[in-house]
Image (cartoon, rainbow, N blue to C red; front, side):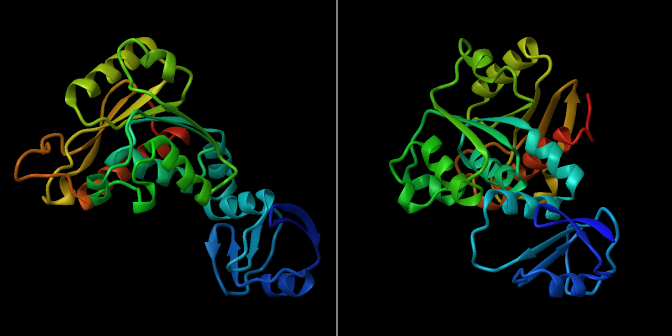
Length: 268
């Protein structure tokens, strides 16, 4: 007998292979995930395996959805990410895309902060749709995350971050993603958090405008708990606007750095 996890539940089975397991249990399996890997092969089963049988087009319950995420990410990774507490300051080109990526990654606790509403020029690079025009960005982003994973803990605050409220807003979070537009606001938040929130890592974005090579965008560990993603030089200006490809690449760097911090791969 093998002791495995099947669609989030512990199962004892005398099935020797994945195909035998499919015959033994009444799950419709349009997709099979075996220890984080989608496969149609007939792998042998052993103790500790994680198996998910997925029916296309059907919304699973919370337990099943979590098991599918766990199967995709591998169990140890998923549990750490699920426990993660991440705040995103600014839901524009960087922050909106970071929020979506972290939601897809299964970060269990997200805090979304922005003061603005969605307007038409945002659609060239930010993760919003025509149906969101006029909505608070916090509400529009929470709505999207609900459609990605309705079981995440998502909190929002529609407020402008200032020197006076920055620490009270973000203290206690594992990581804060700094995703502001203006350099002075970036510096204000980073300095406040590094000075007053010593246990919080800060992942900032700087330099992602234009259509230069995406290979120039990098993640740099500046010091202690401070990381910067971007080329650190290409700011938005006349003739060098913000465009979806490089902005999204930079956001992906931020999201990946946050993931690495939650997993304990990167330390100060």
